[in-house]
Image: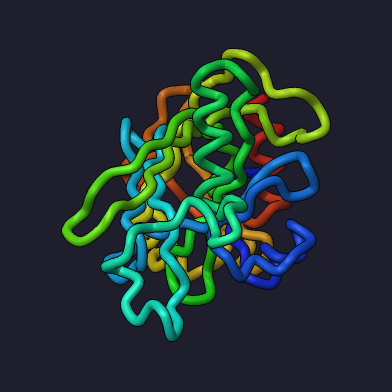
Length: 229
């Protein structure tokens, strides 16, 4: 399921809500959603670490308005003036409770904008830590999420010791998208596409080289997995 290609409309349809905000805590009571980007012009400093198994996600700014002309010089808010938590505050509280064992880690679906109009579903992550730090001008939130296998069925409890998963780097996805012309290499389909490992990572294949990644439509991706099994 991870690493499939979606439009913004398909993403919203899948989640059953408009994803105008980049941080969406507790959708349907089963999971949260964040939108990320590591593109050079991205508004926030998200990054993947540990070979693509860990996401460090930056919290979101105070909205621009008459009281805030430049959100990039204002501390990211954890609460609204009323005292209720912002999305930053809700994710931060869940992360701290998970860190102390007061609750299970929040399951988070992560979608990545890889180019205009094209999003990649990066799969399920667990929210395991959070903190605040200073950048050049203000204080920002940081969230640590761990990419995991086998957590797509949100109707069952999260496993205690999930298997780590590696996300295909953005640069590799962009190279593969260009090389394969945004089409399935088997049939030329342009919908329901997946970034597929030629040799699966579990069998020693790499996520770090475009030579081991290809675009497949859902039908050929499933057919390939069945042959490997």
